Image 1 (cartoon, rainbow, N blue to C red):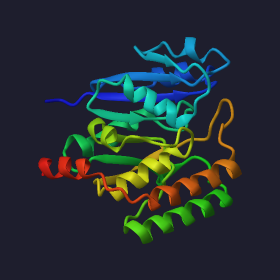
Image 2: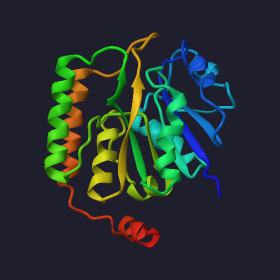
Image 3: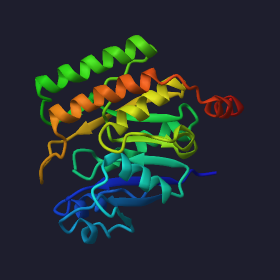
Length: 239
């Protein structure tokens, strides 16, 4: 049976780019598009109603993680794909992300710009921070992750539902999700992706504040000892 894909796109004040981004999503895979307008103050909500997208609006700016989770509540697909609305990722590469999951090779994939193609070099201070995080992950979980903060990912819906609840509602969500995946020994694979410079608008990430928050989430989630036996049982039954 063909797997249905739910593409979740969190968006905050992306009215100038969201329409073109949505229209660039290919129709070759069976999918639904869910845009979560995170309390935008511009015309994001109106501009998101293209290419058959369902638009969900948060009452106020709740954060990146909260928007992803809100989108999942409205998703009907078997596989959840998340991608940012800023145009830095190529929607045509969604197929590459979901293919290993559809084939039953893994439960989750992460798009990595580090092993892919980058339009503009990443600043040195960001690379140093990323390498520090990746070293900790490799030491603790013996898993090589080259881009832990990627917002371009795919995961089985049943898996992410079993990983709930999530504490992080903002940019720390990506780290909390990744650590939970690694702790529960969920099969994961990085996929090379293209990464483009943002052409419209500006990033909403505050490098120092959000960087420190991501580190806090990493250590906090690693220290949380509870084992999700339901996930382990689910995966064993499938093997």
